[in-house]
Length: 250
Ligand SMILES: N[C@@H](CCC(=O)N[C@@H](CS)C(=O)NCC(=O)O)C(=O)O
Image (tube, rainbow, N blue to C red; front, side, top):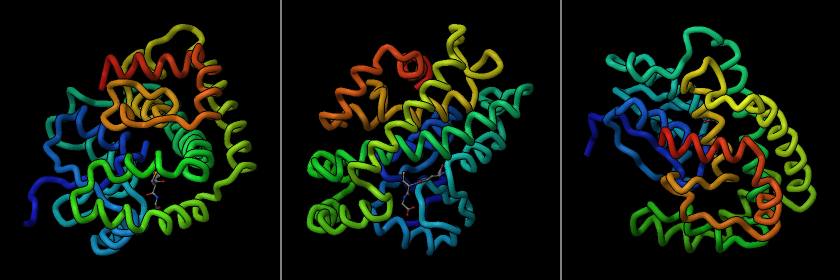
């Protein structure tokens, strides 16, 4: 049946999808959350006329908005959203800079770092997170096709031991930058109030910080090497701040 509400298409495991979901929740938008299976997502995106295959995308009144940043822009422009606004009046440029960098660098490398160990060495720990919100028979389909899906993901995201080590270094450097930004003890990244930069950084760091308020990662287990590294990083301001931001705002 056709829904009149906006429909947000997501992979449960995706931190970019969490960013979009958080924004729609923050703005109290009445939307339908639709979990899609890998493969199916590309077919739906193409049917809706989205330019790329990636989730998240939002289908609203015959148009499609793809990408978490575009979905924030859309939410910010909905009637009645003034009280919930996430774009600061001043320091807008700094906010956009932080969001773009976390999307393009840490977001991509945290994913590659995690999957390079989890999907390559412990694929059975990843599958339940992928399938947890899929209904039968999609759930069964993913179980059966898992070896093939895993292979495609390894190739598309360029996963492996060396790649994981490279991404780990990049993630460490990005965390240093966020630690620096937060070193004066500020609660919010930009403009002294909760903004889209905070949602972007907290949701994209959430696979490392595993905040208990996260709607999906309460179910995610870190593979052993990553778990050891996170334990070493545990007193980083960026990871503590991520958990505090989830507690306060999610
Ligand atoms: N910058 C994009 C990144 C989206 C993205 O990388 N999505 C991944 C899941 S984490 C995806 O859909 N990959 C499969 C594909 O591209 O077909 C955003 O903010 O939405």
